[in-house]
Image 1 (cartoon, rainbow, N blue to C red):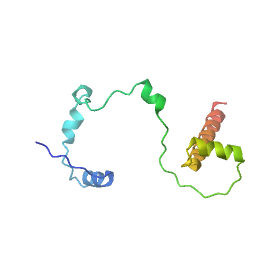
Image 2 (spheres, helix red, strand yellow):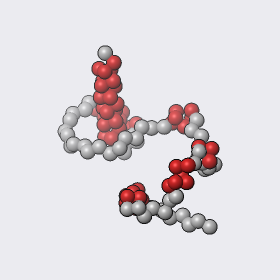
Image 3 (cartoon, one colour):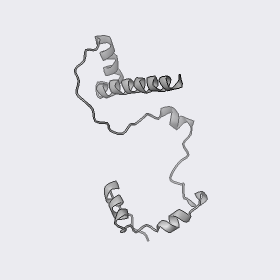
Image 4 (cartoon, rainbow, N blue to C red):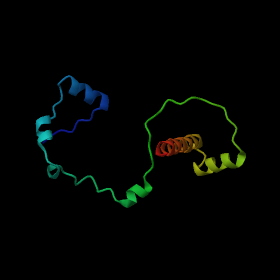
Length: 107
């Protein structure tokens, strides 16, 4: 019986780089898609993607002070249920910047 061992991504990468990985990489490389056991990985359907949320890698943020009108601020606080509303505002601004960059490239 195989023993499951958990590693952090950092320790797993270190083991691979140092050649200490116990994974049979040649066997993995030789596997075909149909050889992979997906019984514990359900197919991602339209319902999954309808409820999916964008998750960006952490980006270094800079503290700023800004003025936001009360109704807008209250909307974000209510939408975030009071917690994480600043993150939500940042996400909206990030999406806006992305959209502006996409539009400028399309011209």
